[in-house]
Image 1 (cartoon, rainbow, N blue to C red):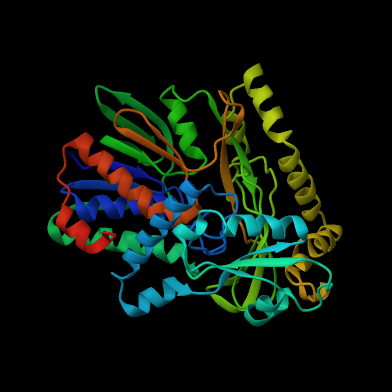
Image 2 (image 1 turned 90 degrees about the vertical axis):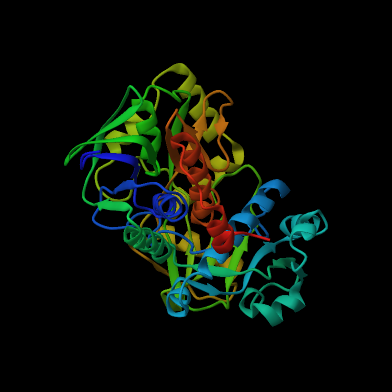
Length: 445
Protein backbone atom coordinates (compact mmCIF):
# COMPACT_ATOMS: atom_id res chain seq x y z
CA UNK A 1 0.00 0.00 0.00
CA UNK A 2 1.17 3.55 -0.68
CA UNK A 3 0.35 6.40 1.67
CA UNK A 4 -3.07 6.92 0.09
CA UNK A 5 -4.16 3.28 0.22
CA UNK A 6 -5.83 1.90 3.34
CA UNK A 7 -7.54 -1.25 4.44
CA UNK A 8 -10.27 0.87 6.01
CA UNK A 9 -11.31 4.51 5.73
CA UNK A 10 -13.83 5.96 8.18
CA UNK A 11 -15.48 9.24 7.20
CA UNK A 12 -16.86 11.27 10.09
CA UNK A 13 -15.29 12.12 13.43
CA UNK A 14 -18.37 12.17 15.63
CA UNK A 15 -18.96 9.57 18.29
CA UNK A 16 -20.16 6.94 15.78
CA UNK A 17 -17.05 7.16 13.60
CA UNK A 18 -14.81 7.37 16.66
CA UNK A 19 -16.39 4.19 18.06
CA UNK A 20 -15.74 2.29 14.81
CA UNK A 21 -12.12 3.49 14.81
CA UNK A 22 -11.66 2.35 18.40
CA UNK A 23 -13.30 -1.06 17.99
CA UNK A 24 -11.46 -1.97 14.79
CA UNK A 25 -8.04 -0.78 15.95
CA UNK A 26 -8.32 -2.29 19.44
CA UNK A 27 -9.81 -5.71 18.69
CA UNK A 28 -8.79 -6.69 15.14
CA UNK A 29 -5.50 -7.12 13.30
CA UNK A 30 -6.29 -4.33 10.83
CA UNK A 31 -2.99 -2.73 9.80
CA UNK A 32 -3.87 0.61 8.20
CA UNK A 33 -6.85 2.83 9.05
CA UNK A 34 -7.68 6.44 8.21
CA UNK A 35 -10.35 8.64 9.77
CA UNK A 36 -11.36 11.68 7.71
CA UNK A 37 -13.22 14.57 9.35
CA UNK A 38 -14.34 17.68 7.47
CA UNK A 39 -14.13 19.94 10.50
CA UNK A 40 -11.17 20.84 12.68
CA UNK A 41 -11.56 18.31 15.50
CA UNK A 42 -13.39 15.31 16.90
CA UNK A 43 -17.07 15.68 17.92
CA UNK A 44 -17.81 19.23 16.77
CA UNK A 45 -21.45 18.63 15.75
CA UNK A 46 -24.13 16.42 17.32
CA UNK A 47 -21.69 14.64 19.65
CA UNK A 48 -20.59 17.97 21.09
CA UNK A 49 -21.60 18.43 24.71
CA UNK A 50 -23.82 21.41 23.79
CA UNK A 51 -25.70 19.56 21.06
CA UNK A 52 -27.46 16.75 22.91
CA UNK A 53 -29.21 15.93 26.18
CA UNK A 54 -26.16 14.10 27.62
CA UNK A 55 -28.37 11.14 28.58
CA UNK A 56 -27.30 7.50 28.68
CA UNK A 57 -30.51 5.90 27.42
CA UNK A 58 -31.39 2.54 29.00
CA UNK A 59 -34.93 2.32 27.62
CA UNK A 60 -36.55 2.44 31.05
CA UNK A 61 -38.08 5.93 30.87
CA UNK A 62 -38.43 6.21 27.08
CA UNK A 63 -42.18 5.78 26.73
CA UNK A 64 -42.14 5.59 22.92
CA UNK A 65 -40.02 2.39 22.99
CA UNK A 66 -41.36 -1.11 22.54
CA UNK A 67 -40.15 -3.72 25.03
CA UNK A 68 -37.81 -5.08 22.36
CA UNK A 69 -36.34 -1.65 21.72
CA UNK A 70 -35.98 -1.04 25.47
CA UNK A 71 -34.08 -4.32 25.86
CA UNK A 72 -31.73 -3.33 23.02
CA UNK A 73 -31.16 0.09 24.58
CA UNK A 74 -30.35 -1.50 27.94
CA UNK A 75 -27.62 -3.63 26.35
CA UNK A 76 -26.19 -0.64 24.48
CA UNK A 77 -26.05 1.44 27.65
CA UNK A 78 -24.43 -1.36 29.63
CA UNK A 79 -21.74 -1.59 26.95
CA UNK A 80 -20.94 2.10 27.49
CA UNK A 81 -20.68 1.52 31.25
CA UNK A 82 -18.36 -1.42 30.60
CA UNK A 83 -16.11 0.80 28.50
CA UNK A 84 -16.07 3.45 31.23
CA UNK A 85 -14.50 0.92 33.58
CA UNK A 86 -11.42 0.93 31.30
CA UNK A 87 -10.79 4.63 31.91
CA UNK A 88 -8.77 6.06 34.77
CA UNK A 89 -10.75 7.63 37.59
CA UNK A 90 -10.21 11.26 36.59
CA UNK A 91 -11.18 10.72 32.95
CA UNK A 92 -14.17 8.59 33.94
CA UNK A 93 -15.48 11.26 36.34
CA UNK A 94 -15.21 13.93 33.65
CA UNK A 95 -17.01 11.74 31.10
CA UNK A 96 -19.87 10.15 33.06
CA UNK A 97 -21.75 10.94 36.22
CA UNK A 98 -24.63 9.19 37.98
CA UNK A 99 -27.76 11.30 38.29
CA UNK A 100 -31.42 10.90 39.10
CA UNK A 101 -33.65 10.18 36.08
CA UNK A 102 -37.41 9.86 35.68
CA UNK A 103 -40.30 10.19 33.24
CA UNK A 104 -43.08 12.50 34.41
CA UNK A 105 -46.75 12.20 33.52
CA UNK A 106 -48.92 15.30 33.97
CA UNK A 107 -52.71 15.01 33.85
CA UNK A 108 -54.96 11.97 33.87
CA UNK A 109 -54.10 10.70 30.37
CA UNK A 110 -50.33 10.74 30.87
CA UNK A 111 -50.56 9.39 34.43
CA UNK A 112 -52.72 6.49 33.27
CA UNK A 113 -50.25 5.81 30.44
CA UNK A 114 -47.41 5.52 32.96
CA UNK A 115 -49.52 3.21 35.15
CA UNK A 116 -50.03 0.92 32.17
CA UNK A 117 -46.34 1.04 31.30
CA UNK A 118 -45.30 0.21 34.85
CA UNK A 119 -47.61 -2.79 35.08
CA UNK A 120 -46.54 -4.12 31.67
CA UNK A 121 -43.40 -6.17 30.98
CA UNK A 122 -41.06 -3.22 31.61
CA UNK A 123 -40.40 -4.35 35.20
CA UNK A 124 -39.01 -7.63 33.92
CA UNK A 125 -36.28 -5.63 32.16
CA UNK A 126 -35.89 -2.99 34.87
CA UNK A 127 -36.81 -4.45 38.27
CA UNK A 128 -35.45 -1.33 40.01
CA UNK A 129 -37.97 0.96 38.29
CA UNK A 130 -40.28 2.67 40.80
CA UNK A 131 -43.65 4.34 40.34
CA UNK A 132 -44.10 7.62 42.21
CA UNK A 133 -47.15 9.69 42.93
CA UNK A 134 -47.42 13.20 44.31
CA UNK A 135 -46.10 12.36 47.80
CA UNK A 136 -43.16 10.40 46.36
CA UNK A 137 -42.30 13.22 43.98
CA UNK A 138 -42.34 15.69 46.86
CA UNK A 139 -39.50 13.68 48.42
CA UNK A 140 -37.53 12.84 45.28
CA UNK A 141 -37.99 15.83 42.93
CA UNK A 142 -39.91 18.44 44.94
CA UNK A 143 -39.97 21.20 42.30
CA UNK A 144 -42.11 19.02 40.03
CA UNK A 145 -44.90 19.30 42.63
CA UNK A 146 -44.34 22.67 44.31
CA UNK A 147 -46.96 25.14 43.08
CA UNK A 148 -48.94 22.52 41.12
CA UNK A 149 -52.73 22.51 41.26
CA UNK A 150 -53.65 19.94 43.93
CA UNK A 151 -56.30 18.48 41.63
CA UNK A 152 -53.89 17.85 38.76
CA UNK A 153 -52.76 14.23 38.44
CA UNK A 154 -49.00 13.70 38.49
CA UNK A 155 -47.14 10.39 38.25
CA UNK A 156 -43.55 9.40 37.53
CA UNK A 157 -41.41 6.36 36.83
CA UNK A 158 -38.08 6.69 38.64
CA UNK A 159 -35.09 4.86 37.15
CA UNK A 160 -32.30 3.31 39.16
CA UNK A 161 -29.97 3.67 36.14
CA UNK A 162 -29.56 7.40 35.65
CA UNK A 163 -26.39 8.76 34.08
CA UNK A 164 -25.35 11.88 32.24
CA UNK A 165 -22.54 11.49 29.72
CA UNK A 166 -20.25 13.97 28.00
CA UNK A 167 -20.36 12.29 24.60
CA UNK A 168 -17.79 14.70 23.22
CA UNK A 169 -15.25 13.50 25.78
CA UNK A 170 -16.32 9.90 25.15
CA UNK A 171 -15.66 10.29 21.41
CA UNK A 172 -12.24 11.79 22.14
CA UNK A 173 -11.50 8.87 24.46
CA UNK A 174 -12.29 6.38 21.67
CA UNK A 175 -9.89 8.16 19.32
CA UNK A 176 -7.18 8.42 21.97
CA UNK A 177 -7.34 4.67 22.63
CA UNK A 178 -7.29 3.98 18.89
CA UNK A 179 -4.12 6.02 18.50
CA UNK A 180 -2.51 4.03 21.33
CA UNK A 181 -2.51 1.05 18.97
CA UNK A 182 0.22 2.69 16.91
CA UNK A 183 2.64 1.26 19.42
CA UNK A 184 1.55 -2.21 18.32
CA UNK A 185 2.58 -1.58 14.74
CA UNK A 186 -0.78 -0.39 13.41
CA UNK A 187 -1.10 2.73 11.33
CA UNK A 188 -4.01 4.77 12.64
CA UNK A 189 -4.21 8.15 10.91
CA UNK A 190 -6.46 11.18 11.39
CA UNK A 191 -7.13 13.84 8.78
CA UNK A 192 -9.06 16.99 9.72
CA UNK A 193 -10.44 19.89 7.67
CA UNK A 194 -10.92 17.45 4.78
CA UNK A 195 -14.16 17.16 2.85
CA UNK A 196 -15.10 14.10 0.78
CA UNK A 197 -16.65 15.36 -2.45
CA UNK A 198 -16.96 12.17 -4.50
CA UNK A 199 -17.23 8.43 -3.90
CA UNK A 200 -16.71 5.68 -6.48
CA UNK A 201 -16.27 1.93 -6.36
CA UNK A 202 -14.23 0.16 -9.05
CA UNK A 203 -13.06 -3.45 -9.00
CA UNK A 204 -13.61 -3.79 -5.27
CA UNK A 205 -11.74 -0.59 -4.36
CA UNK A 206 -13.46 2.51 -3.02
CA UNK A 207 -12.03 5.80 -4.26
CA UNK A 208 -12.69 8.88 -2.17
CA UNK A 209 -11.99 12.21 -3.82
CA UNK A 210 -11.40 14.81 -1.12
CA UNK A 211 -10.28 18.41 -0.87
CA UNK A 212 -6.81 16.98 -0.17
CA UNK A 213 -6.65 14.50 -3.02
CA UNK A 214 -7.77 10.93 -3.65
CA UNK A 215 -7.66 8.12 -1.08
CA UNK A 216 -8.44 4.46 -1.65
CA UNK A 217 -9.67 1.67 0.63
CA UNK A 218 -10.84 -1.90 0.57
CA UNK A 219 -13.64 -0.94 2.96
CA UNK A 220 -15.30 2.38 3.83
CA UNK A 221 -17.53 3.42 6.72
CA UNK A 222 -19.47 6.65 6.51
CA UNK A 223 -20.50 8.02 9.90
CA UNK A 224 -21.52 11.43 8.66
CA UNK A 225 -25.07 11.74 9.95
CA UNK A 226 -27.36 13.21 7.32
CA UNK A 227 -24.61 13.13 4.72
CA UNK A 228 -24.27 9.33 4.87
CA UNK A 229 -27.40 8.92 2.76
CA UNK A 230 -25.99 11.30 0.13
CA UNK A 231 -22.82 9.22 -0.07
CA UNK A 232 -24.88 6.04 -0.39
CA UNK A 233 -26.73 7.62 -3.30
CA UNK A 234 -23.39 8.36 -4.98
CA UNK A 235 -23.16 4.58 -5.37
CA UNK A 236 -26.65 4.65 -6.91
CA UNK A 237 -28.59 2.77 -4.27
CA UNK A 238 -31.17 3.35 -1.51
CA UNK A 239 -33.11 5.70 -3.75
CA UNK A 240 -36.29 4.94 -1.81
CA UNK A 241 -34.99 6.88 1.20
CA UNK A 242 -35.04 10.60 1.95
CA UNK A 243 -34.19 12.76 4.95
CA UNK A 244 -36.24 15.16 6.99
CA UNK A 245 -33.95 17.20 9.24
CA UNK A 246 -35.24 17.77 12.76
CA UNK A 247 -33.55 20.58 14.64
CA UNK A 248 -33.50 21.12 18.36
CA UNK A 249 -32.85 24.20 20.52
CA UNK A 250 -32.61 24.61 24.28
CA UNK A 251 -33.60 27.04 26.99
CA UNK A 252 -31.84 27.21 30.36
CA UNK A 253 -32.47 28.36 33.90
CA UNK A 254 -30.56 28.25 37.14
CA UNK A 255 -30.50 24.74 38.64
CA UNK A 256 -34.09 23.80 39.49
CA UNK A 257 -34.04 20.00 39.54
CA UNK A 258 -32.01 17.25 41.17
CA UNK A 259 -31.80 15.18 38.02
CA UNK A 260 -33.27 14.42 34.59
CA UNK A 261 -37.02 14.73 34.06
CA UNK A 262 -38.40 13.34 30.80
CA UNK A 263 -41.98 13.76 29.63
CA UNK A 264 -44.36 11.08 28.33
CA UNK A 265 -44.26 10.83 24.56
CA UNK A 266 -46.31 8.92 22.04
CA UNK A 267 -45.01 5.79 20.37
CA UNK A 268 -44.00 6.07 16.72
CA UNK A 269 -42.72 9.64 17.02
CA UNK A 270 -38.96 9.44 16.43
CA UNK A 271 -37.92 12.62 18.23
CA UNK A 272 -38.07 13.24 21.96
CA UNK A 273 -40.60 15.26 23.88
CA UNK A 274 -39.20 18.27 25.73
CA UNK A 275 -37.34 17.25 28.89
CA UNK A 276 -35.27 18.91 31.60
CA UNK A 277 -31.65 17.97 32.24
CA UNK A 278 -28.63 18.93 34.30
CA UNK A 279 -25.47 19.85 32.40
CA UNK A 280 -22.38 17.74 33.04
CA UNK A 281 -20.13 20.74 32.37
CA UNK A 282 -22.12 23.31 34.34
CA UNK A 283 -23.74 22.08 37.55
CA UNK A 284 -25.39 25.48 38.15
CA UNK A 285 -27.99 25.21 35.35
CA UNK A 286 -30.95 23.14 34.17
CA UNK A 287 -31.53 22.75 30.42
CA UNK A 288 -34.95 22.44 28.76
CA UNK A 289 -35.44 21.00 25.29
CA UNK A 290 -34.98 20.10 22.60
CA UNK A 291 -37.59 21.87 20.55
CA UNK A 292 -38.51 20.11 17.30
CA UNK A 293 -38.31 22.15 14.10
CA UNK A 294 -37.71 21.37 10.43
CA UNK A 295 -34.62 23.36 9.38
CA UNK A 296 -33.88 23.32 5.66
CA UNK A 297 -30.29 22.16 6.08
CA UNK A 298 -28.36 19.06 7.11
CA UNK A 299 -26.08 20.52 9.79
CA UNK A 300 -25.94 23.52 12.09
CA UNK A 301 -22.48 24.46 10.90
CA UNK A 302 -21.75 25.76 7.43
CA UNK A 303 -23.99 26.19 4.40
CA UNK A 304 -25.75 22.85 3.86
CA UNK A 305 -29.09 23.90 2.34
CA UNK A 306 -28.15 22.81 -1.19
CA UNK A 307 -27.03 19.41 0.07
CA UNK A 308 -30.35 19.08 1.91
CA UNK A 309 -32.17 19.69 -1.36
CA UNK A 310 -30.01 17.05 -3.05
CA UNK A 311 -31.01 14.44 -0.47
CA UNK A 312 -34.57 14.23 -1.84
CA UNK A 313 -35.84 12.24 -4.79
CA UNK A 314 -37.92 14.52 -6.93
CA UNK A 315 -40.87 12.39 -7.93
CA UNK A 316 -44.52 11.99 -7.01
CA UNK A 317 -43.75 9.14 -4.59
CA UNK A 318 -41.47 11.38 -2.54
CA UNK A 319 -44.06 14.15 -2.43
CA UNK A 320 -46.77 11.72 -1.31
CA UNK A 321 -44.50 10.32 1.40
CA UNK A 322 -43.46 13.69 2.83
CA UNK A 323 -47.07 14.87 2.78
CA UNK A 324 -48.24 11.78 4.65
CA UNK A 325 -45.43 11.83 7.23
CA UNK A 326 -45.77 15.52 8.06
CA UNK A 327 -49.54 15.24 7.94
CA UNK A 328 -49.59 12.85 10.92
CA UNK A 329 -51.80 14.54 13.52
CA UNK A 330 -49.36 14.17 16.42
CA UNK A 331 -46.27 15.13 14.42
CA UNK A 332 -48.02 18.10 12.81
CA UNK A 333 -49.16 19.37 16.20
CA UNK A 334 -45.62 19.09 17.61
CA UNK A 335 -44.05 20.86 14.65
CA UNK A 336 -46.62 23.66 14.61
CA UNK A 337 -46.17 24.26 18.33
CA UNK A 338 -42.39 24.11 18.16
CA UNK A 339 -42.36 26.54 15.24
CA UNK A 340 -43.91 29.09 17.57
CA UNK A 341 -41.22 28.36 20.18
CA UNK A 342 -38.62 29.68 17.75
CA UNK A 343 -40.28 33.05 17.28
CA UNK A 344 -38.81 36.15 18.98
CA UNK A 345 -40.41 37.18 22.29
CA UNK A 346 -43.63 35.15 21.96
CA UNK A 347 -41.69 31.88 21.49
CA UNK A 348 -40.13 31.99 24.94
CA UNK A 349 -43.51 32.77 26.51
CA UNK A 350 -45.20 29.82 24.81
CA UNK A 351 -42.35 27.45 25.65
CA UNK A 352 -42.47 28.59 29.27
CA UNK A 353 -46.23 28.03 29.56
CA UNK A 354 -46.60 24.84 27.49
CA UNK A 355 -43.44 22.95 28.39
CA UNK A 356 -41.36 24.24 31.29
CA UNK A 357 -44.21 24.91 33.72
CA UNK A 358 -45.55 21.40 33.16
CA UNK A 359 -42.28 20.16 34.63
CA UNK A 360 -41.66 22.93 37.21
CA UNK A 361 -44.94 24.72 38.00
CA UNK A 362 -43.33 27.30 40.29
CA UNK A 363 -40.61 28.51 37.93
CA UNK A 364 -40.64 32.24 37.12
CA UNK A 365 -40.68 33.49 33.52
CA UNK A 366 -37.68 35.72 34.12
CA UNK A 367 -35.63 32.69 35.22
CA UNK A 368 -35.76 31.16 31.70
CA UNK A 369 -33.31 32.07 28.93
CA UNK A 370 -32.84 30.96 25.36
CA UNK A 371 -29.38 29.38 25.05
CA UNK A 372 -27.83 30.39 21.76
CA UNK A 373 -25.56 27.79 20.16
CA UNK A 374 -27.01 24.84 22.08
CA UNK A 375 -28.73 21.99 20.24
CA UNK A 376 -28.22 20.16 16.95
CA UNK A 377 -29.86 18.71 13.85
CA UNK A 378 -30.81 15.05 13.62
CA UNK A 379 -31.60 13.24 10.37
CA UNK A 380 -34.91 11.39 10.35
CA UNK A 381 -35.04 8.85 7.54
CA UNK A 382 -38.24 8.65 5.49
CA UNK A 383 -38.95 5.35 3.75
CA UNK A 384 -40.91 5.92 0.55
CA UNK A 385 -41.93 2.26 0.37
CA UNK A 386 -43.81 2.40 3.68
CA UNK A 387 -44.49 6.16 3.51
CA UNK A 388 -43.35 6.61 7.11
CA UNK A 389 -40.48 7.64 9.33
CA UNK A 390 -37.88 4.94 9.82
CA UNK A 391 -37.94 4.68 13.63
CA UNK A 392 -34.67 3.51 15.13
CA UNK A 393 -31.09 3.28 13.96
CA UNK A 394 -30.47 3.63 10.24
CA UNK A 395 -27.55 1.64 8.86
CA UNK A 396 -27.12 0.87 5.16
CA UNK A 397 -24.78 -1.67 3.54
CA UNK A 398 -23.31 -1.90 0.06
CA UNK A 399 -20.73 -4.69 -0.40
CA UNK A 400 -17.68 -3.41 1.53
CA UNK A 401 -19.30 -0.18 2.66
CA UNK A 402 -21.40 0.83 5.66
CA UNK A 403 -23.41 4.04 5.87
CA UNK A 404 -24.40 5.01 9.42
CA UNK A 405 -27.09 7.65 9.14
CA UNK A 406 -28.58 7.99 12.59
CA UNK A 407 -27.99 5.95 15.73
CA UNK A 408 -30.87 5.26 18.08
CA UNK A 409 -31.11 6.14 20.88
CA UNK A 410 -28.56 8.72 19.91
CA UNK A 411 -24.98 8.56 21.08
CA UNK A 412 -25.84 5.91 23.70
CA UNK A 413 -25.85 3.27 20.96
CA UNK A 414 -22.68 4.43 19.19
CA UNK A 415 -20.31 1.96 20.86
CA UNK A 416 -22.61 -0.99 20.17
CA UNK A 417 -22.95 0.23 16.58
CA UNK A 418 -19.15 0.44 16.29
CA UNK A 419 -18.81 -3.13 17.55
CA UNK A 420 -21.41 -4.30 15.01
CA UNK A 421 -19.47 -2.54 12.26
CA UNK A 422 -16.20 -4.06 13.48
CA UNK A 423 -17.60 -7.60 13.16
CA UNK A 424 -18.95 -6.89 9.68
CA UNK A 425 -15.63 -5.37 8.56
CA UNK A 426 -13.67 -8.29 9.99
CA UNK A 427 -15.74 -10.76 7.98
CA UNK A 428 -15.43 -8.71 4.80
CA UNK A 429 -11.65 -8.21 5.06
CA UNK A 430 -10.87 -11.59 6.64
CA UNK A 431 -9.48 -9.96 9.78
CA UNK A 432 -8.97 -11.71 13.11
CA UNK A 433 -10.93 -10.48 16.11
CA UNK A 434 -9.14 -10.81 19.46
CA UNK A 435 -12.15 -12.35 21.18
CA UNK A 436 -10.46 -12.92 24.52
CA UNK A 437 -9.39 -9.27 24.79
CA UNK A 438 -12.82 -8.08 23.68
CA UNK A 439 -14.63 -10.26 26.22
CA UNK A 440 -12.22 -9.20 28.97
CA UNK A 441 -12.65 -5.49 28.28
CA UNK A 442 -16.14 -5.04 26.84
CA UNK A 443 -17.92 -8.33 27.48
CA UNK A 444 -21.33 -8.30 29.17
CA UNK A 445 -22.65 -10.88 31.60
